[in-house]
Image 1 (cartoon, helix red, strand yellow):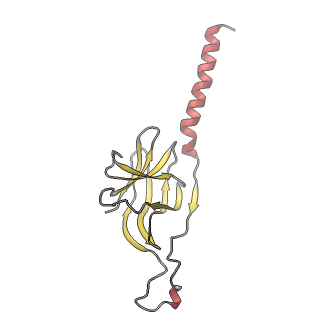
Image 2 (cartoon, one colour):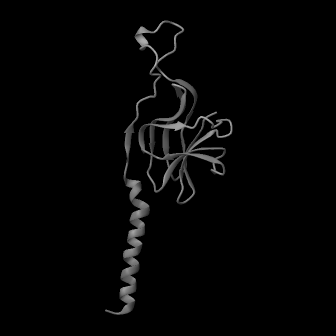
Image 3 (spheres, rainbow, N blue to C red):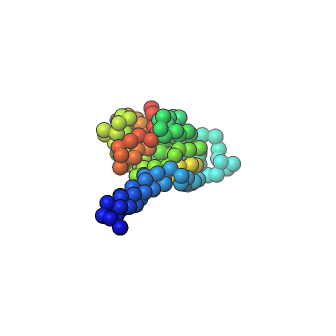
Length: 160
């Protein structure tokens, strides 16, 4: 076998591996159904008197998710508070998968300034991400799903 054929074969194998790495996440959907965070130190709803704190979390902000032309998405993002903690909650969420996806709170759609809430844990369903106490949502009004590897926005919601 000539060295030219060996080089072509090796490049073909490497190209196939790279293509698989880049494209395979697109075909893997990850479903999750996190429960709605609740206030645990209060009476059940049926035992609660008017004016007493509810077991259900307070919704502070909410917005619809906007996909991009290359990365369609749907669902709602809510900021809820339960037991003194705030959560970014994706509800009825659906997006396509990709490599190296993370959830950010950001000051803009380009993720120039952001707070990383962690890896995207699902491409479908209901998912909670705890928001650190010191984060000002007026400074970070966007919830983003961001591909770190390629610096690409997958979807967003303006949660003001």
